[in-house]
Image 1 (cartoon, rainbow, N blue to C red):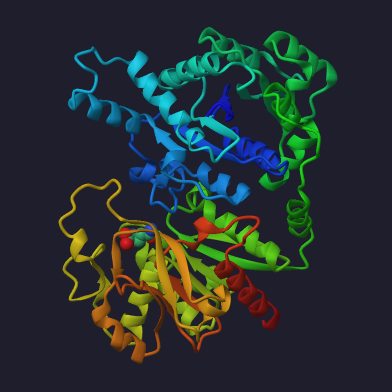
Image 2: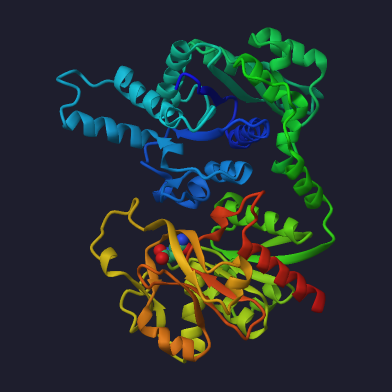
Length: 538
Ligand code: GLN
């Protein structure tokens, strides 16, 4: 533990400044210098995890191999670092209190009054250092969710203060991410909100070591000096983070600003060799110089909010780069797809992806979209609920069983082609009770998916309650909807495809969670290749 160094990232002035991207970019630079780095996120809300949050509230729920339902920033960490995260990488106030209260009930506090300080703060400190104690990492970056000054952030800020004091300045460092707003009427960038937010941090006993300043315009030398002087940081520790075309530019922007250098210097770590970003730069270069473009419809019901399908959108970027293709995404609200609108919405596209989701709203539109893709030889990719809709569509329109549905939407359906598993039937809690995390899947060799993965055994992450009902398998296979991926332990169907269609694949799992810059997901890569072919033949 003595050798593990800690970097904390706090936020000021405004939310949504992109702490996750800054943390991931710094981690990338440190990793590219040979350090073993991980990132963790501490969220100040009372939900035990974001699994029970509506995507409109908090964006996508990201899922790790060990089945944790986590904040979407963990997705950025994995996409940037290509290293898996786990339950330990995301902690919420709800989880902290849950475990302190459990300890209290067991009598572990020996009659003491249990208080925010020291009991909650001790729990937070322990959890911050959990991954550090494994010896697997040289540097742990901890992102503190929320904005300083929020009531709910206080126990975290106090924990960081104590840890900094205990570990010392060469072992712990605080980066404060703030906003430098531009007032167009005055034609000026303003530093005052940042000064105030640094002061608020100071009132809690924490001196920011590094300021990362989000801005729409270049910060002048004078302004940087002013920020350094009034915020009490070294001039080289004022880092500009200017709006970028793509989040994947941010590591290079931070490198140019010397963020990694400032951090390594304070932590007294070697900083002599430059980070090796060769592979990253190849990716960026291809990202910026596509030779072709495709249009894909993303059909879902949370399409108003970009963050709801974050991992899918990023997986498309990775797969586009692998194919030298610029992927244009058209978000299509499934509630507005019907017999009249469908042509207008879909006919011009090169492929569709029917998104994951929960509940009844918009499912008929999804089923219509699947039917259109199936009948028009349009590349189709169904993920989780999207796969379930493909199975329902086939059962209704090819097998002719019009009553087909999922018991999630229609509990009394006479054709429950998507059903609930026995083990799930008596569960009444919502949080953490789905089929979650990584499961093995055995692929059939003569299939689209095998051609994509080039492997017969894969492992993918799940997050769902309902399953393909095996009692319809024989009929569906005979009618042409093949099952090409099966869970070897349970016999559950994980993949369906139509071999006579150019690219029609539905997967019960979430491939998007495992796509990274270094390892674009093979199914997304194969799907984009199919859409590229489709667009060239149009
Ligand atoms: N609602 C479906 C289920 O629970 C699908 C979930 C999803 O798409 N993630 O099985």
